[in-house]
Length: 277
Ligand SMILES: [Fe+2]
Ligand SMILES: [Fe+2]
Image (cartoon, rainbow, N blue to C red; front, side):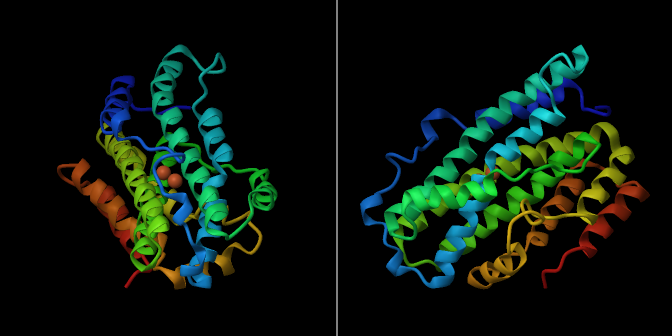
């Protein structure tokens, strides 16, 4: 892969992420929540449906994690300089993957504890979607981070919106934890995208434009009934991934001191792709 940022840049971003993620502030599924009090009877049908939907999305972690291995390999298929870059990135990737896997387990545990789905049945249900392939059709490295920027921010906002409308303290607590993690993941990828803009300027304009022009949330193209379900959950708590585009524009604004014409046009294009009122 060409056009990476220098290893010192990716290392600085990863150091920042890990400094913002001390072990003392980590949480685990086993002790963070009072599972015995989880009660899906306090949820509306739509809210239960939203929990089932986000469980499926989070549970696809093996597929998402694998994208990093394929596109940022840490083996002898890449030259030494690329390996060095990818090895630094890997410090982020493994920590991020642990956190996302924890999200999947927390939501599955909630479903069982609250009485939405029994553990064995849920496991079988998740397997149907979980084994389907996942890939991102990108050829420039900045695109993976820009995609993640939108997706992490959209997920964070959805969890916050859902938490605001549920009247069930255990689920509210779970959603609060998840939202805070997604916010940290967003900060990391936003930092990386900024570094690409500063290092490569106009050269990342077309790749970034491509990500927004063809944006699909994960599993949108593979999950059975995705679109109808996505509309349904948006009804439960406002959900519009283009809300996250605002944050990408902010990242662009802050990264470059003076916008070139091309960067300016990119920011305008992203703004036009928003569907939020
Ligand atoms: Fe997550
Ligand atoms: Fe995340």
